[in-house]
Amino acid sequence: MSGGPEPEEYVRLSKEYSELQPMIGPIRDYRRAVEDYKGAKELLGSKDPEMRELAELEYEELGEKIETLSQEIRLLLLPKDSADERSVILEVRAGTGGDEAALFAGNLFRMYQRYAELNRWKVTIMTESEGDMGGYKEIIANISGTGVYAKLKYESGVHRVQRVPETEASGRIHTSAATVAVLPEVEDIDIEVRNEDIRIDTMRASGAGGQHVNTTDSAVRITHMPSGIVVTSSEKSQHQNRDRAMKVLRARLYEMEREKRDSERSEARRDQVGTGDRSGRIRTYNFPQGRVTDHRINLTLYKIDKVLEGEALEELISALITENQAAQLAAMDQTT
Image 1 (cartoon, rainbow, N blue to C red):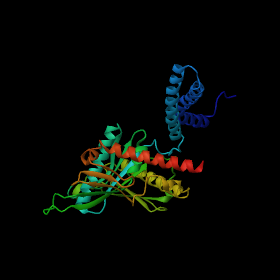
Image 2 (cartoon, one colour):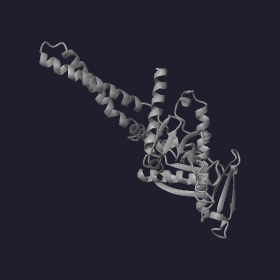
Image 3 (cartoon, rainbow, N blue to C red):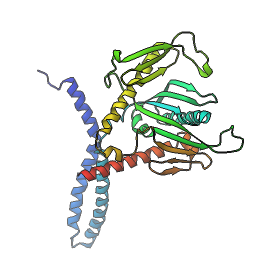
Image 4 (cartoon, helix red, strand yellow):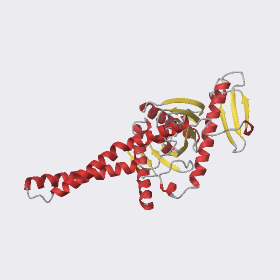
């Protein structure tokens, strides 16, 4: 007779325990503070002036502590996104604006690269298509680490830039755009891709400017026929290209399922800060004024250089997380 739970049950219980662990300390502190608060309240009626004065101070301090702990516990009780702890597939594509858009896509990818370095995450470029004047027409990378999606999921959407291109002789400000997609990385067990649902084509891998990297058919294009999703990887190794393309395909299919599921849920999702509408303009980078504005929360930082170096990006992301938590708390209050 077995003395413990089955392996699957043990994994489930371990996961549940690890999720509850952060709440244990604050709940204990809250209960202790409530008991002390009751004791201080009783002493407010003491005939001893010195004792009454001490009780008044403690009563006020404990009231503030209880409020702080209550808010902390409420935040810990908010529903968790099951994908938050995952690594991500980051896709950056040049939008309207031609060469300038490609240069801006390069700026954005560099920003995420630097932000990843500051967080000790690993960045692996999966596929890239360089712009004619620099930057990228498209670049897809894997950013691996703990809690990457929890931070970067707010970056999905249209990023707009306003600046004077180097080729602009009259000094006129141009507006260009790039799109960013952040997809949680998934494994085979998360989403099933049937062999009969995909078509795999091979072709010659090309580098910047159309130069052939090699003379073998190493590049891989995978078409998922039920969804119409097409993924290409064009590094030197065909085996590696297949693995990378399948990783991107699974991530896109998983995200498509998540979006479908979320759209079927209550309006609470729409009350939250946008985390995935890639057709919506989320941020403007204005070089002449040195500002970055996030339109979802109306936050402007006059430190464009530090944002694009990844250093001040945390300020924007933290503000978005706070705003999202506030929206969730408001929705929780409405239902209770």
